[in-house]
Amino acid sequence: MSTSTLEKHSKALDAADDGASHTITITLRIRRFNPEVSEDATWQDFQLEMDPKERVLDALHKVKWEQDGTLTFRRSCAHGICGSDAMRINGKNRLACKTLLKDINPEKPITVEAIKGLTVLKDLVVDMEPFFQAYRDVMPFLITTGNEPTRERLQSAEDRERFDDTTKCILCAACTSSCPVFWNDGQYFGPAAIVNAHRFIFDSRDEGGEQRLEILNDKDGVWRCRTTFNCTDACPRGIEVTKAIQEVKRALITRRF
Image 1: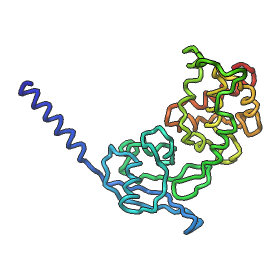
Image 2: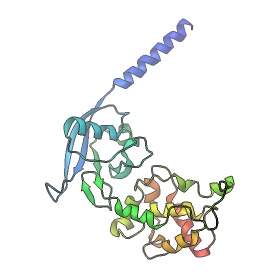
Image 3: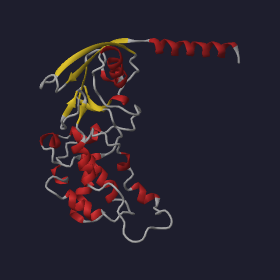
Image 4: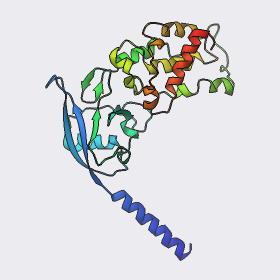
């Protein structure tokens, strides 16, 4: 390696080290709620020294591990796959593990609160049972008749592409809890349940499409959608949620899917 190449490499490493050691002071403003202490929720500020390239989840960990061990929130994989840490950050539904501090203006207080439309159990943890019940109600599994095949059920790439987008759902509830209809009426199935119904309705191997469509034709089903696009904007996986809902509506009208 030439001397000039070595110098460039050394400078690059120095720059990386400088970036890694850069920290800023942020204010994490968390909406706290503990039913054993008070019926009212309150806001609490925490001052933290953080690298701006760290995530909101890292900041929450720092609060819990170093300042207040009573802070309660959900998280599991911490890599945007499990969907456990959906919360409202600066007024928008996001995954804490995918939200970088530098991307949400750390010069101002960063607000963190529980997602809306579901009962808050403590701090950032909500009761997910109504959400999962709606998911179970749309029968999110392959339905077939006849004898069990002796080999895998084959499907063309074109048939798979038809519902590929809606297979990306990680059940984080970010879309459903961003929906104004769901906020006002918890009986509405919500975007996530409809997305997961879509995934099987348009699967060429499935035979339960008519059953799912009838379920979603209920007064609390797909027709409650007001097409505000909140769900599409909130989805951390980039699913075109509103488009999927419209396709289910069209299938109900035409019975073609």
